[in-house]
Image (cartoon, rainbow, N blue to C red; front, side, top):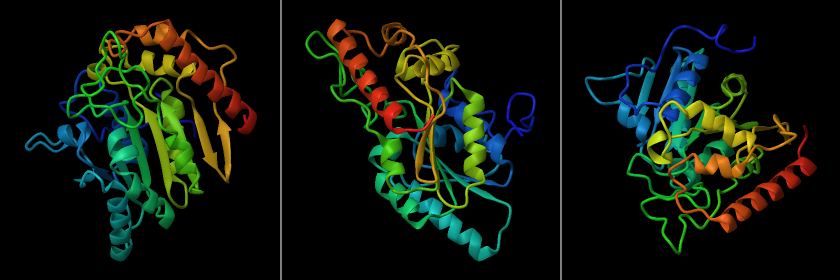
Length: 296
């Protein structure tokens, strides 16, 4: 059954939290848990979501949950899977919600190990493109030109000088049973992929773009729109990897304006025409490669 606003449960398993207005990560967790249900076991390393989910007496997580060490989401998922098996538990889903820093930098080794062991667990990386919980520092998936506290944007250097790591492809290179990318701009696609991961016999990984109004310098009511625009202008993509093959879920016939997308956000204050040209060139090279090599 297709999951949408009409078919998804009205029950809430993550609500009453203290996340910032318009928080993409909170919506990412809320929707995933609605798909997974009350038998979900949620593991969250130190990040914005563990901060707002485990502040006694305000406990907005209405499933079983725990905070893991920062680097250990993947290994803790494996541990919970082993413990649940030893206890003879049935009808449950083990899921991790780690930010981009806790995944692509600090937690990469334990994620790799979880995939190698092929444990039946879902690893969801909510990607807001920086270490937001500690004040907006650069991560391995911070885009070129973004202003952070350790990649300041000024007259001579216009923010981050590196581009996003290809984490989806790095994960797929492990031969994982199921991996996907998603965006909060396309909610039904995201929920479908969570459901698919839930039914995968083995390890699964979802990398979802989650706009952060605080770190991105956007209005709090723009989260869905800006997440959609990231896909439509070609700077993010919707794809899956399963049965050893990549598949594009959306291939825009025409891209919307990259410049318009970037200039709506306060995190790109000093981009000039050369920066825009570099970003567009990298986008075009990426799409030329995946359109040639990935199924549609």
